[in-house]
Image 1 (cartoon, rainbow over the protein chains, first blue to last red):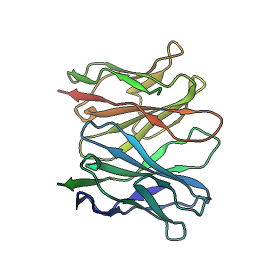
Image 2: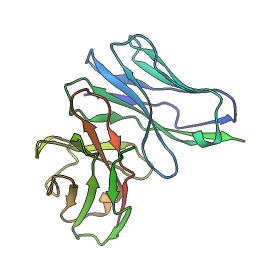
Image 3: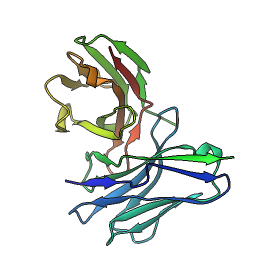
Length: 116
Length: 114
């Protein structure tokens, strides 16, 4: 079974600074997908960024980028130029590769506070 | 931009009562999911649904739970006899067919069992 670990229950960062959230996972699969979801106080789950395991290039999405280390099974999220609106719970998630219809396995989350 | 919707946004019920949570997935999606999140905890998979049948379910999804797609647009989760520990946020998600992309989540239904 797959497991996802986020070792930082809470983090804070000053506005405009950079912060990195950690995620490690355990799987015997060779091909899979990794995701970061953001959950603001409204509790809506919002996709931040997605990485396909067979791609060596790290995904980027505007101010968000990942450091994907497949051998180490590590998938960290870097937020540059942090904004107050980035304050949220961040969940790392794993999905097995399949044709379709696979469920997510989520980590326990990291609560990020961006301070003015 | 199309989105997944869920109703109601909040529901309060008495222990032992039946509840039905409703979801309208994105119209061209054919894979549907329910997840739950107990307050302060991680999001947990409940069940996936495709072609009018359950394709996978977790150990949480016991006989008290059922899902159906009654009319081709709604996707419902029924809890037959609610327990206190069913209090949680319930998220519906849908996924398009063709290229495995990602799941699009609804805003959630906050269920409180008293």
